[in-house]
Amino acid sequence: MANMLGALKTIEQYKSDSPHYSELLDILAELLILREEYRKTTDKTIFQVDDHLIAQKVAGGLPLIDFFSGKFDVSVPQNYFLRLLDIAEKRSPEKAQEMVAQLHDGVLDFEKMVRHTFDPLSEEEFPDEKDDDFFDLVELFLEESLRPELEKVAHQYGDRISKLGWNEGYCPICGKEPKIGEIKASDGRRYLFCNQCGFEWHYRRVKCPFCGNEEQQALAYFTIEGDERYRVDVCNVCKRYIKIVDLRDTEQEANLDVEDIATLHLDMLAYEEGYS
View 1: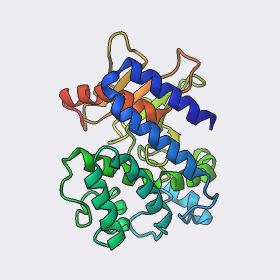
View 2: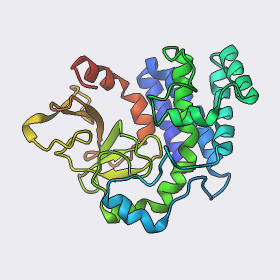
View 3: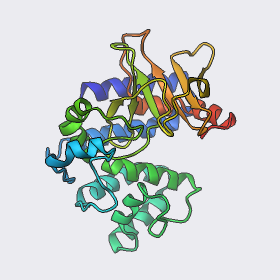
């Protein structure tokens, strides 16, 4: 609860500093409140992990959760998703109500929709109007619908995975690629953050998380003058980037869900420089 209250306080500060992000930050604040509520529903998770295979999976670079062949009960995340659509309804009432009706009537299959977030090539169960702001929000909420359940897996197995030494640039819990990370004040090391399950793992600073490039000459970063707390690590081999919050000169902790929204200007700058 303290972490959430701190995040909400940070959101209010960022809304004051960057008014053009106010709507997105308001959505995030509502989302965080709902997430906290759903965290309390049960300690059990809908995802099954075979304890005996964890060491083998880590050694083989395989995340714990297999979304493509694994089976899981979607009723809990679907209920959460429907609550999240209440947030969307405030902004697009007709579209949100139509989606709720289609889910109840079976026109849309929630399980296939949520699996789509892990397999973007699977278009069959996702609405066509993906360029619409409403459907951007829907995609965000589909990912978020699994967050509380995946957090339980990360909480249960995260320390074990860290001790085994995960060396990949994608998440060891769910396999998603990171969008943001941090350099911690405690040890000066870089950690990558998974927006899908909330897990953080150590990853070498002189290595691209996306292609594994370790040639220092092909790795770089840029900052914005006067805002050196934030940087963008880029790779000139694969032309990918990741945002980093550098906490070495501060005693504060960062909520990386909030920081990801508050640093959207860095995404735009990276795109303009030819990184994706």
